[in-house]
Length: 501
Image 1 (tube, rainbow, N blue to C red):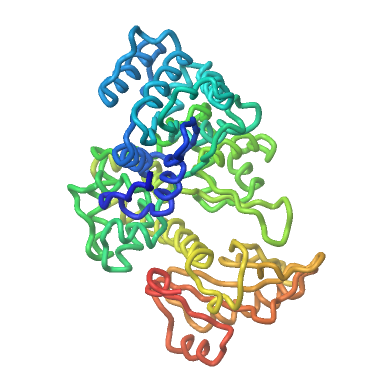
Image 2 (image 1 turned 180 degrees about the vertical axis):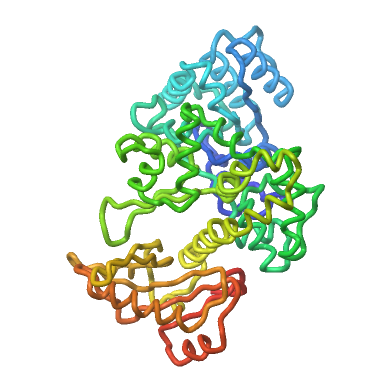
């Protein structure tokens, strides 16, 4: 069977569609297992429903319910989509899954797909489910289950509870080593999101991205409010959506957090997210904000990282010095604005709240979001010519000036890929990313930080090292002239971030 054509209704996701299609299009009769996971509203269910429609099979959405009703609903899904029903009610999940894949494996010769969406709901009330799937896969591997099959069958388990889904194939899990597909579905990046939201104006696309990021599901939720056509329209749009107590997005952070079963002590996790959103990026600073020690919060940081709420970045030059950042735009927005001003927002005093919160929005939301965009652009879209050569993943970095007793943060730093020697790390680029307009003093500051880095032990500057200045509002004529005279300096504005390399 040729791989199915990606439907026109599915925006982007070319790589994900190709990976899923290849996984599910195996020809010889057999049973394969795949895992798909990602944060709520990233488009997992939509993607998998399109796959089932294109290839045939069953899409089953699990709910939070006890075993007997869950087995009954699963039987109904099979009956409705396969036009097949079990001769008697399923005894347990071993029986249910064996009969289901057996019916699909003898259903013609075309590959069949069984998708079980929101798998953690089933797993929670059926602790033997993982072992049931293990037994099923082992039976198929031994050939006893598939000897009479005429079609290959693929099982795809999908879920939004990231900390649960990422453990399915690890440690002592019964399904460890039995999956042929392990696919995280990420949110759209800022370029993809602009196309998905169909926003022409770059500044508007950036403004919307600072609030909702690249979660595909938010577009339908704000359809009635429309989409701003200018950055000045952001306030009115927020008043109708994220800041509106009647809108579903008003408490989105709570919905997201409560979806993960490992998040049990909500007060601690909310406080942890709050601290990180406010700019505390090290475990020591986060712990101090909670009046705890780093050891006290190590478990919570691990859960938040596994659940996809925060991202951990390792220091490029120092081992065991990770930095933490909030992963989702809307979670950061909620913790810095909605949660702080909830009482007034519920009183519909949106204009008053926005007036008070706009400075926080500019410094704690717009600034960090722009920095993240610039690092992503460096990793994904910048050409080797722009970067001066091939680079590894970019990161931010703290630079210390011991003589003056000062610390500075470099927003974008990357090492040259494949050029390091024992004990020496070659810096290929350093960059400053600011949402406001940059003047020539920004280049002078970058030069100063480069000198500080050059004096650090174990660090060398690549012969083709570049200095990048990013700005969401452009550059003064003086800076443009200074950069023009220095080939190692690159100026990157919104147009280049969204459309150039």
